[in-house]
Length: 281
View 1 (cartoon, one colour):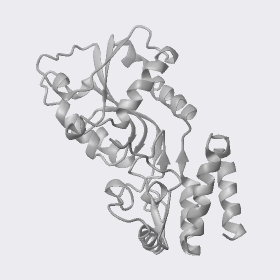
View 2 (tube, helix red, strand yellow; view 1 turned 60 degrees about the vertical axis):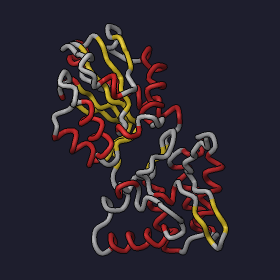
View 3 (spheres, one colour; view 1 turned 180 degrees about the vertical axis):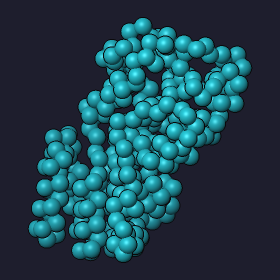
Protein backbone atom coordinates (compact mmCIF):
# COMPACT_ATOMS: atom_id res chain seq x y z
CA UNK A 1 0.00 0.00 0.00
CA UNK A 2 1.19 3.53 -0.74
CA UNK A 3 2.45 5.51 2.26
CA UNK A 4 -0.18 8.29 2.02
CA UNK A 5 -3.27 6.19 2.89
CA UNK A 6 -1.20 4.34 5.52
CA UNK A 7 -0.22 7.68 7.08
CA UNK A 8 -3.84 8.90 6.98
CA UNK A 9 -4.98 5.72 8.71
CA UNK A 10 -2.30 6.09 11.37
CA UNK A 11 -3.33 9.71 11.96
CA UNK A 12 -6.97 8.65 12.38
CA UNK A 13 -6.04 5.97 14.93
CA UNK A 14 -3.92 8.39 16.92
CA UNK A 15 -6.43 11.25 16.73
CA UNK A 16 -9.25 9.03 17.99
CA UNK A 17 -6.95 7.49 20.64
CA UNK A 18 -7.72 4.07 19.26
CA UNK A 19 -4.08 3.19 19.81
CA UNK A 20 -4.91 3.12 23.54
CA UNK A 21 -7.51 0.36 23.07
CA UNK A 22 -6.25 -3.17 23.65
CA UNK A 23 -6.05 -5.02 20.33
CA UNK A 24 -5.83 -1.85 18.24
CA UNK A 25 -2.74 -3.20 16.46
CA UNK A 26 -4.80 -6.15 15.18
CA UNK A 27 -7.57 -3.84 13.97
CA UNK A 28 -5.00 -1.53 12.35
CA UNK A 29 -3.44 -4.43 10.42
CA UNK A 30 -6.86 -5.52 9.15
CA UNK A 31 -7.56 -1.96 8.01
CA UNK A 32 -4.24 -1.92 6.14
CA UNK A 33 -5.14 -5.14 4.32
CA UNK A 34 -8.57 -3.74 3.47
CA UNK A 35 -7.12 -0.53 2.04
CA UNK A 36 -4.55 -2.54 0.11
CA UNK A 37 -7.40 -4.43 -1.59
CA UNK A 38 -9.20 -1.28 -2.74
CA UNK A 39 -8.81 1.25 -5.53
CA UNK A 40 -7.70 4.79 -4.75
CA UNK A 41 -11.29 6.11 -4.86
CA UNK A 42 -12.47 3.31 -2.61
CA UNK A 43 -9.62 3.90 -0.16
CA UNK A 44 -10.47 7.58 0.10
CA UNK A 45 -14.09 6.80 0.94
CA UNK A 46 -13.17 4.16 3.53
CA UNK A 47 -10.73 6.56 5.17
CA UNK A 48 -13.37 9.30 5.29
CA UNK A 49 -15.84 6.89 6.87
CA UNK A 50 -13.21 5.63 9.30
CA UNK A 51 -12.58 9.21 10.39
CA UNK A 52 -16.29 9.35 11.38
CA UNK A 53 -16.26 5.90 12.95
CA UNK A 54 -16.94 5.33 16.65
CA UNK A 55 -15.09 2.46 18.33
CA UNK A 56 -16.00 2.21 22.00
CA UNK A 57 -13.65 0.37 24.30
CA UNK A 58 -15.13 -1.66 27.15
CA UNK A 59 -14.22 1.08 29.64
CA UNK A 60 -15.82 3.78 27.49
CA UNK A 61 -18.92 1.64 27.08
CA UNK A 62 -19.31 1.32 30.85
CA UNK A 63 -18.65 5.05 31.31
CA UNK A 64 -21.33 5.97 28.76
CA UNK A 65 -23.80 3.47 30.24
CA UNK A 66 -23.45 5.15 33.64
CA UNK A 67 -23.88 8.56 31.97
CA UNK A 68 -27.13 7.47 30.32
CA UNK A 69 -28.63 6.32 33.62
CA UNK A 70 -27.43 9.46 35.39
CA UNK A 71 -29.01 11.65 32.69
CA UNK A 72 -32.54 10.73 33.76
CA UNK A 73 -34.25 13.67 35.45
CA UNK A 74 -34.13 13.60 39.25
CA UNK A 75 -37.86 14.28 39.65
CA UNK A 76 -38.63 11.18 37.58
CA UNK A 77 -36.28 9.06 39.69
CA UNK A 78 -37.73 10.36 42.94
CA UNK A 79 -41.18 9.20 41.83
CA UNK A 80 -39.94 5.62 41.38
CA UNK A 81 -39.46 2.80 43.88
CA UNK A 82 -38.68 0.01 41.44
CA UNK A 83 -37.21 -0.40 37.95
CA UNK A 84 -37.79 -3.53 35.87
CA UNK A 85 -35.18 -4.07 33.14
CA UNK A 86 -36.14 -5.75 29.87
CA UNK A 87 -33.91 -6.31 26.80
CA UNK A 88 -34.93 -4.81 23.45
CA UNK A 89 -35.59 -7.73 21.08
CA UNK A 90 -38.08 -8.96 18.54
CA UNK A 91 -40.49 -11.56 19.94
CA UNK A 92 -39.24 -14.10 17.40
CA UNK A 93 -35.66 -13.58 18.67
CA UNK A 94 -36.51 -14.28 22.30
CA UNK A 95 -34.49 -17.51 22.37
CA UNK A 96 -31.41 -15.73 20.98
CA UNK A 97 -28.97 -13.80 23.17
CA UNK A 98 -29.13 -10.21 21.91
CA UNK A 99 -27.06 -7.16 22.80
CA UNK A 100 -29.73 -6.04 25.26
CA UNK A 101 -29.12 -9.18 27.32
CA UNK A 102 -25.41 -8.36 27.54
CA UNK A 103 -26.17 -4.82 28.69
CA UNK A 104 -28.52 -6.17 31.37
CA UNK A 105 -25.62 -8.12 32.84
CA UNK A 106 -23.37 -5.04 32.82
CA UNK A 107 -26.02 -2.92 34.55
CA UNK A 108 -25.75 -5.15 37.61
CA UNK A 109 -22.16 -3.95 37.99
CA UNK A 110 -22.81 -0.21 37.57
CA UNK A 111 -25.78 0.20 39.94
CA UNK A 112 -23.51 1.20 42.89
CA UNK A 113 -22.15 4.07 40.76
CA UNK A 114 -25.51 5.56 39.80
CA UNK A 115 -26.63 8.88 41.27
CA UNK A 116 -30.15 9.22 42.65
CA UNK A 117 -31.03 5.51 42.61
CA UNK A 118 -30.36 4.52 46.25
CA UNK A 119 -34.08 4.31 47.07
CA UNK A 120 -34.87 2.23 43.96
CA UNK A 121 -34.81 -1.56 43.72
CA UNK A 122 -33.97 -3.25 40.41
CA UNK A 123 -35.40 -6.35 38.84
CA UNK A 124 -35.24 -7.90 35.38
CA UNK A 125 -37.51 -9.87 33.09
CA UNK A 126 -36.22 -11.51 29.91
CA UNK A 127 -39.29 -13.38 28.68
CA UNK A 128 -42.26 -11.87 26.87
CA UNK A 129 -44.75 -14.31 28.35
CA UNK A 130 -43.92 -12.99 31.82
CA UNK A 131 -44.15 -9.29 31.03
CA UNK A 132 -47.22 -9.59 28.78
CA UNK A 133 -49.14 -11.82 31.18
CA UNK A 134 -52.16 -10.17 32.79
CA UNK A 135 -50.74 -11.32 36.11
CA UNK A 136 -47.95 -8.76 35.61
CA UNK A 137 -49.28 -5.49 36.96
CA UNK A 138 -47.50 -2.19 37.41
CA UNK A 139 -48.04 0.71 39.80
CA UNK A 140 -47.26 4.41 39.39
CA UNK A 141 -43.93 4.06 41.21
CA UNK A 142 -42.62 1.31 38.92
CA UNK A 143 -40.99 1.82 35.52
CA UNK A 144 -39.95 -0.60 32.79
CA UNK A 145 -36.55 0.20 31.27
CA UNK A 146 -36.13 -1.25 27.78
CA UNK A 147 -32.39 -1.82 27.38
CA UNK A 148 -30.13 -1.94 24.32
CA UNK A 149 -26.69 -0.79 23.26
CA UNK A 150 -27.68 0.53 19.83
CA UNK A 151 -30.96 1.65 18.27
CA UNK A 152 -30.56 1.65 14.50
CA UNK A 153 -33.65 1.20 12.38
CA UNK A 154 -36.81 1.44 14.47
CA UNK A 155 -37.86 -2.10 13.57
CA UNK A 156 -36.67 -3.88 16.73
CA UNK A 157 -37.66 -1.23 19.25
CA UNK A 158 -41.10 -0.96 17.59
CA UNK A 159 -41.59 -4.72 17.85
CA UNK A 160 -40.55 -4.63 21.51
CA UNK A 161 -42.88 -1.77 22.43
CA UNK A 162 -45.81 -3.22 20.46
CA UNK A 163 -45.47 -6.60 22.16
CA UNK A 164 -45.12 -5.21 25.68
CA UNK A 165 -48.15 -2.94 25.25
CA UNK A 166 -50.32 -5.98 24.55
CA UNK A 167 -50.41 -6.13 28.35
CA UNK A 168 -53.26 -3.72 29.13
CA UNK A 169 -51.73 -3.07 32.56
CA UNK A 170 -48.74 -1.32 30.95
CA UNK A 171 -48.96 2.20 29.56
CA UNK A 172 -46.51 4.13 27.43
CA UNK A 173 -45.62 6.41 30.33
CA UNK A 174 -44.43 3.35 32.26
CA UNK A 175 -41.72 2.82 29.64
CA UNK A 176 -38.22 4.28 29.41
CA UNK A 177 -35.85 3.46 26.55
CA UNK A 178 -32.16 3.22 27.52
CA UNK A 179 -29.46 2.85 24.87
CA UNK A 180 -25.79 3.79 24.58
CA UNK A 181 -26.21 5.02 20.99
CA UNK A 182 -29.12 5.68 18.65
CA UNK A 183 -29.90 6.81 15.13
CA UNK A 184 -32.37 9.52 14.21
CA UNK A 185 -34.93 7.09 12.78
CA UNK A 186 -35.33 5.30 16.11
CA UNK A 187 -35.29 8.48 18.19
CA UNK A 188 -37.96 10.09 15.99
CA UNK A 189 -40.16 7.00 16.27
CA UNK A 190 -39.85 6.75 20.07
CA UNK A 191 -40.46 10.48 20.52
CA UNK A 192 -43.56 10.26 18.31
CA UNK A 193 -45.01 7.80 20.84
CA UNK A 194 -44.33 10.13 23.75
CA UNK A 195 -42.02 7.59 25.38
CA UNK A 196 -38.94 8.80 27.26
CA UNK A 197 -35.66 7.82 25.58
CA UNK A 198 -32.13 8.32 26.89
CA UNK A 199 -28.89 7.87 24.99
CA UNK A 200 -25.34 9.21 25.13
CA UNK A 201 -24.34 9.02 21.47
CA UNK A 202 -26.18 10.16 18.34
CA UNK A 203 -25.28 8.14 15.25
CA UNK A 204 -25.68 9.71 11.81
CA UNK A 205 -25.85 7.88 8.49
CA UNK A 206 -22.26 7.63 7.31
CA UNK A 207 -22.85 8.65 3.69
CA UNK A 208 -26.36 10.08 3.31
CA UNK A 209 -26.00 12.58 6.18
CA UNK A 210 -22.60 13.89 5.09
CA UNK A 211 -22.75 14.43 1.33
CA UNK A 212 -25.00 16.21 -1.15
CA UNK A 213 -25.32 15.77 -4.91
CA UNK A 214 -23.36 14.90 -6.95
CA UNK A 215 -20.87 13.60 -4.34
CA UNK A 216 -23.62 11.70 -2.55
CA UNK A 217 -24.45 9.59 -5.60
CA UNK A 218 -20.76 9.11 -6.39
CA UNK A 219 -20.00 7.76 -2.91
CA UNK A 220 -23.05 5.50 -2.94
CA UNK A 221 -21.77 4.00 -6.20
CA UNK A 222 -18.28 3.59 -4.75
CA UNK A 223 -19.62 1.81 -1.67
CA UNK A 224 -21.72 -0.51 -3.82
CA UNK A 225 -18.54 -1.41 -5.71
CA UNK A 226 -16.72 -2.07 -2.43
CA UNK A 227 -19.56 -4.31 -1.25
CA UNK A 228 -19.09 -6.54 -4.29
CA UNK A 229 -16.11 -7.95 -2.39
CA UNK A 230 -18.58 -9.39 0.12
CA UNK A 231 -20.36 -12.61 -0.83
CA UNK A 232 -23.81 -13.78 0.21
CA UNK A 233 -26.33 -11.82 2.27
CA UNK A 234 -24.19 -8.87 3.26
CA UNK A 235 -26.65 -6.32 4.71
CA UNK A 236 -25.89 -3.71 2.05
CA UNK A 237 -25.22 -0.33 3.70
CA UNK A 238 -25.98 -1.97 7.06
CA UNK A 239 -29.23 -3.54 8.23
CA UNK A 240 -32.16 -1.70 6.62
CA UNK A 241 -29.70 0.78 5.07
CA UNK A 242 -28.75 2.18 8.48
CA UNK A 243 -25.30 3.32 7.22
CA UNK A 244 -23.98 3.11 10.78
CA UNK A 245 -20.33 3.64 11.64
CA UNK A 246 -19.97 2.19 15.11
CA UNK A 247 -18.48 -0.68 17.08
CA UNK A 248 -19.54 -1.17 20.69
CA UNK A 249 -18.66 -4.31 22.63
CA UNK A 250 -19.72 -5.95 19.37
CA UNK A 251 -20.29 -4.35 15.98
CA UNK A 252 -24.02 -4.01 15.22
CA UNK A 253 -25.16 -5.25 11.81
CA UNK A 254 -26.43 -1.70 11.18
CA UNK A 255 -22.81 -0.76 10.43
CA UNK A 256 -21.57 -0.78 6.82
CA UNK A 257 -20.74 -4.49 6.31
CA UNK A 258 -17.27 -3.89 4.85
CA UNK A 259 -16.21 -2.97 8.39
CA UNK A 260 -17.41 -6.23 9.94
CA UNK A 261 -18.09 -8.89 7.29
CA UNK A 262 -15.57 -11.23 5.68
CA UNK A 263 -14.68 -10.25 2.11
CA UNK A 264 -12.77 -11.83 -0.75
CA UNK A 265 -10.21 -10.49 -3.23
CA UNK A 266 -8.64 -12.62 -5.98
CA UNK A 267 -10.03 -15.75 -4.35
CA UNK A 268 -8.46 -14.96 -0.96
CA UNK A 269 -10.66 -14.39 2.09
CA UNK A 270 -9.94 -11.50 4.44
CA UNK A 271 -11.29 -10.69 7.89
CA UNK A 272 -12.88 -7.28 8.33
CA UNK A 273 -11.42 -4.76 10.82
CA UNK A 274 -14.30 -5.08 13.32
CA UNK A 275 -15.43 -8.63 12.58
CA UNK A 276 -18.65 -9.97 14.11
CA UNK A 277 -17.97 -13.43 15.52
CA UNK A 278 -20.74 -16.01 15.79
CA UNK A 279 -20.56 -19.01 18.12
CA UNK A 280 -20.95 -22.38 16.40
CA UNK A 281 -23.37 -24.74 18.13
